[in-house]
Image (cartoon, rainbow, N blue to C red):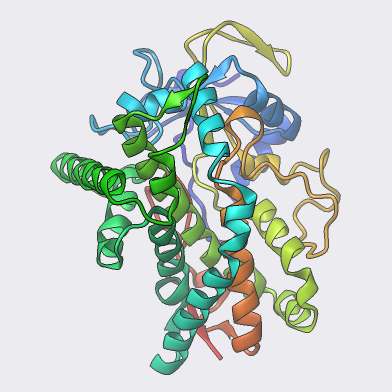
Length: 404
């Protein structure tokens, strides 16, 4: 148990971008449920062991009601982030409203739809990599491929015109940042994003196309009715933010980990059948997953022998859980053909990431194209000099200099 003076600030400082903070391993062994202080000054509980994180993410008593008066604020900003935004987005993530929304989404955002996008995703990746090669070396792989690919894909999925891509990228960054933007900038970004999506939903109702949002405007049944205007707007915003920033950062981190230890990249180039399992292993050993998944406790419970009172906010650290030796053999080693690989990066239970199939397609497509087009790809800087982004709810690298 820590005293008030000893409560550490969270997220923890990370000395190297490709190494997880040492505190995570220490806490997982010595204090698997520990108090931490957030950027807002509020306290929360950090959970670091695999079995505990998995159990909490699957437990319906651990809600996403982060707008509750006694819920910990993730940042000092009065403007809500993606996790604690109110209105229709909050309703989509809670209780019966969430179950209804997932049923509605399950009729349209299917694995079949996502897999049908794979050729187009690879086509976009080929185009971006081609532009990078034409531009000469060294290049920033984040700017060339990591960030544009997911936003291109999500724009096509939602039927958004290409000229909105840059604005989408800015809005998603604002909604996932803890300290980069001023209060006025956050308010402006939130207003602009909502207004854009509201107009886009109206357009899709009037002139539907062959995209997910158009289909969602027409889906209805006797039990669930039809998604309201605000629910459709919230869906578009949620899909864009979750589908862009997280995958964009993961492409860069995945490539950095594979290139930092040359044998991994060379093995993948020699045997591209390893790409699916390499993606899963990259998701598992990701050393920079951000703050973890926050949950609000709706009633008194006990976890790992510790009583947690109702009203507590818990942060589930997938970065720590995914390196738990009780769940994985050689947990700190990147094993490209690891099977099984029950990592928790996409969560579990009712709130498991709805877009995980799309994320996998994008990550696999990035590896497929890069191993084919640039087998000699290498880091242009020492791995220890890579710089992580600060202040993001999700983790990432500021840039990824490469050569070939």
